[in-house]
Length: 304
Image 1 (spheres, rainbow, N blue to C red):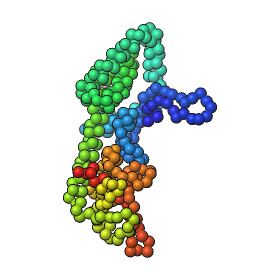
Image 2 (cartoon, rainbow, N blue to C red; image 1 turned 180 degrees about the vertical axis):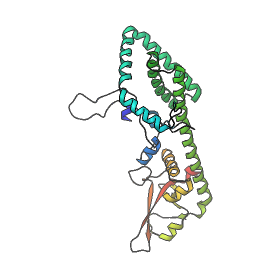
Image 3 (cartoon, rainbow, N blue to C red; image 1 turned 45 degrees about the horizontal axis):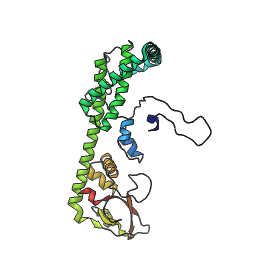
Image 4 (cartoon, one colour; image 1 turned 120 degrees about the vertical axis):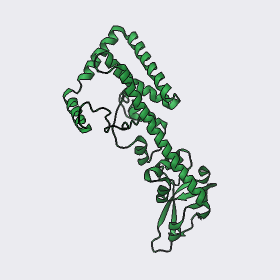
């Protein structure tokens, strides 16, 4: 978030103040932004999606490449690009900056006007294709900045594409991002629907528990879920393994917990990981070393 914001963290020590920058950054990872944040115990919201934008591999392609440009495999093309990058690293940006400085010196007002005209045309095109609510509008702005830089490089004669090819490629990146978001949202809805159906069907059979009371371990193991009152709310308690089975797997259960957390439907018992803090300890009896079972605490009203 701070990298995207363009300013380092300030410190209460003498100095010239925090450094700042204006740049676009790219990264690669096998995990999505949601998966990384959830694994780290952080809640996910649109502020993250607007700053760290997931662009998945294109569908029906050889890995990340839509065109192998005559190479027999994606690996061979990747090796070629690595070799070319190592040999010519920095050449293009130096040429670009030289032409940019000259263009600004020749007619700065005209250059700014042209860039703004290109930006607005891209944003209008993206808004027509994908919508223009506040969250999507921020994404259009960021993709438009990438479009401007590459289109200016085309004008300077540094890139071999046409501006239409460039716009089409960047719009496809936006499209794939929104498709990934839609698929993720659908999985969350499917998992939440399965959880609601399970609670509705098994609520009467669930075990009612009282605060501070120890329970037989076998009884807890067999229980379809737990019910109790916490802070005036009716609570459903489900163990992690049972929740994973209900939702359709570990990842699906995490997505549902994240969604419930965002809706304020989980009850916290201790600080820490927001997806683990909503776990209640239930003590057992009848053994030399009583065990403690943990249950996610979900408000019943959120599951109607």
